[in-house]
Structure formats: structure tokens, C-alpha cells
Length: 431
Image 1 (cartoon, one colour):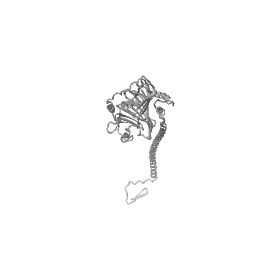
Image 2: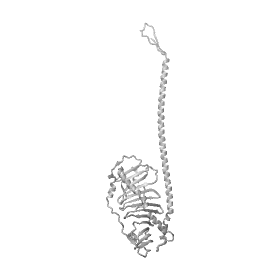
Image 3: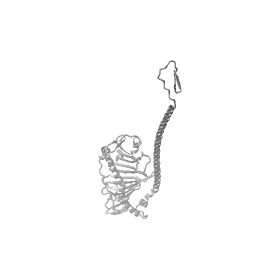
Image 4: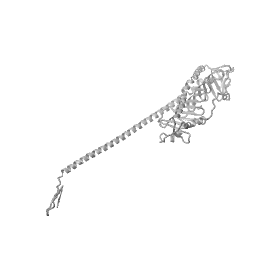
């Protein structure tokens, strides 16, 4: 099981640049059918994968027990240099029995397991808490009725001079080997949910905080080949502005498509199943947490010891987490500061968006006001022109009414040399 908690979808960097930009003009997406959408995973599902088999039971004799007391181990542990095992529980019928702690140590590893043995040599169905002090992990698990059915929660700690992180993984494994995983960190807003059956992995990645950029990816769904860890088939991205895009990844160039409703419903079922892994695993591993509380009450009272084992080692389980307390608090403080900066960035972006909307509204209102003023000015101009025309008509009427009436020329023919004069306005014509 991989512990690294990745970002939002390994394809985002490729899809979000260039053709995936939410701000670019795009043609209408091609609608594909169910067969085309599921072609990649159907090709993976034809690969034959045998059902997981119960590993061969291997035992060792605890060095602190003089009576026969077979204790479960593994070939890997037996092969390690200077391997030795301790069991602080009881022995019955030649096997480890009851509540106790299995301590396995070599030159290269140190693993301890709090569990309950039934005296028959197999504790798969029993609750167990496994500490790996070399790899900084703790796993709470309970087996099901038949291998490999189990439920568990793993805590994995990364602690070095460059990084401190804690990753929690909840898992549910069925008898057929299919596994649901929910993974997250208290120092990372990204959550991953996986639904895998050894042939196909459905991976869903979600961002748990608001984003300031509309083009930021807040959710993704992808299908992965577990053999190559590469995505194929289809991918779904949801962006900060609520836009959702479906991608076809089988070609050389990713293509925006429209997935059929029945395929989206199928993916949604895979997603919901993975979402429920954490809550269900939490309930089932409570038995493991309970035996840990009971055992630590006995082993961490300051008086406990194991024959043949240095007390610093026998009580390491009681104080091991103390070394991470200060780094954890420092990492949490830095993360909270980062969250606050991100929240302020979102608030600033929202304020800017509201300001832009207000400015756009004001510009629209100003434009409409100017258009209204221009229209009113035009109407006023027409009104003034009409008034002017009316005034001009009145002046013309007054002008003509004030002029003398012109004399009509006689229609009689002229007689002799007599001169006749005709007044027309200010002009007198004589002939």
C-alpha cells in the first residue's frame, strides 16, 4: 500500500494547461456511449488475477519462553540477520495464547504486534495493533471470516529534517481481494478515495477547502492500470467555478467528451463505496483499539518487563509517539497558517469578484444612463426644432400679413403714349 498522498490528479498539470483551460473558447463536446467510455477498464479486467491465498503459516519459538510456544512469523523475518522474537502472553497446547505482544527484532527491522491468540496457531480473525518502528507506522486491523477479508486504519509518519507529515489510510478488503481506501492527512487539504480490485483502480481526489482560482481543480476521477500506475480511459475534473469536464485519454491528445448518464452513475457508485471506507473501518477496528488500551494499561505502568529484553525496548511502545509531539504541533501550526493565507486569498478573490461585478453593474448602469440622456437630448432637440419651426411659421405669417396688398395690373390694352405705373412692394414699374 502506497503512503504518499498526491495532489489533485496526476493528469491535471497536462490537462489544465493549453487545451484544458476553462477560459478558452471550445467546440461542443462529442457524446460517447457506454462501451466507448468503459473500453479501457474492460481491457484491464480481462487480465486473469488469482484470488489471494492465505500465506503459509510459519512459526518461531520466542526466546523468552522455555516451554513450547509457537509464535506466528514470516519467512521474511526468519531470513533477517540476527532475528529474534519475544512473546509476553501465555502459551497453550504448544502455541502462543491470549492477549499479549509479539516483538520481532533483527539488525534491520523492529516490529511489534498487540493481539489475541486462540492457542490454535492462527490469529487472522483476531484484532491486532502493529507497530513498525523502522518505518514509523501503526496499523489497527481486524480480520474477517475468510482471508483476505479485513478492515483497518494505518497511521504513517514521515519525520526527517526536511519534512514532517502524518498520513492516515482506512481500508476495507473483501474476500475476493477488492479494496476500498480512504486516505488523508491533517496537514493536507487533499483527500484520496480508491476503489481497486487488483486489475482496475478507480481513484477519486477531492480538495476539502475553497479555492481562489476559478480554474483550480477541486475534484477528479480517474481510472488507473495498477501494473503501470498510469491513467487511461476517461477522467473527470471539476473546477473552482463549478464547471465539470469529461476527458477521453485513450488517444494521443486528450479529448473533451460528454459521458453517458449510465456510465456516470456507475462511477458514482464506485466513488460512494470508497467514501464509506473510513467510517466503516473506524467502527470495525474499535476492537483493536480496545485491546491496545487494555494492554498499555498493563505494560506501561512503570513496573513491566520482559525476560531477556532490555527495558528500553520492552517499554518503547509506551513512549514511542512522544518524539513526534513537537514536530506534530509545529507542522500543525504551519498548516493552520497556510490555511489562513488560503482563506484570505479566497476572501480577497471573492471581494475582487464582487467589486468587478459591482463595477460591471455600474458601467452598465452608466451606459444605460448615457443612452437615456442621449435619447432625451435627441427628443429635446426635436422638440426645440419643432418650436423653432412653429416660431418661423408665425414670423413668416406676420411678415406677409404686414405687407401691403399688391396692385393687380389692368387687363385693358394700352392706349396711345400714356404711361402706366404699377407698384409691387417697394418697386414701381412704369411703361
